Amino acid sequence: MSLLYVNENSAYIGMETNRFFVKYSDGMKKMIPAETLESITIMGHAQMTTQCIQECLKRGIPVSYYSKGGNYFGRLQSTGHVNAKRQRKQCALYKSEFALELSRKVIQAKIKNQMVVLRRYGRSKNISVEEPLPLRQ
Image (tube, rainbow, N blue to C red; front, side, top):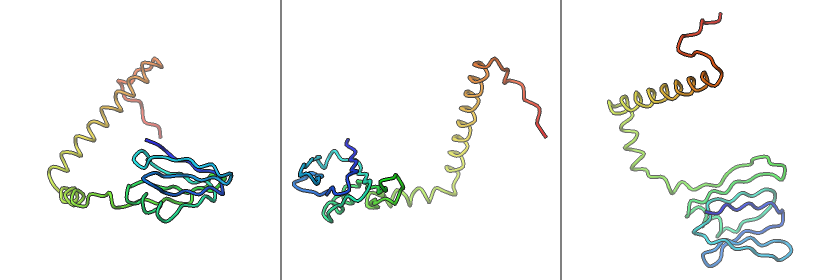
C-alpha cells in the first residue's frame, strides 16, 4: 500500500485513468495506481481536483490537511465504508448477558497482562512484586 505525502505549495493532485497523479510546478508528474493508495497527507497549499476528492471518498482513502509548520487542520474521510447493519447488531448486544461476559473476559485479560508486565519489571529490578506494597497517605 502507498501513502502519498505532498508538501509543495503549488502541487496539484488529480485523477486520470485509474491513477492518482501529483503535478509539480516544474512540470514533473508522478503517478500512483488507485488500488494501492492508502492515504493522502497534504502539507501546505497543494490543491486537489473535485474528481480526485470524489474518488478518495468512494475508495475510502482519507485525506489529511496540515499547515507547512505541521499544524493539523482536519481530515476528509468517507462514511460510506461503515457497515450500518453490523453496528446495529453491536448496539443491540450492548445490554445483554453476552456483553457482560465479554467485558469480564476483557478485564480479566487486562489484569493478567498487567500482572505479567509487573512481574517482568520486578525480575529486571530485583524487586519482589508478590507482596502488596503499603499504601501511601
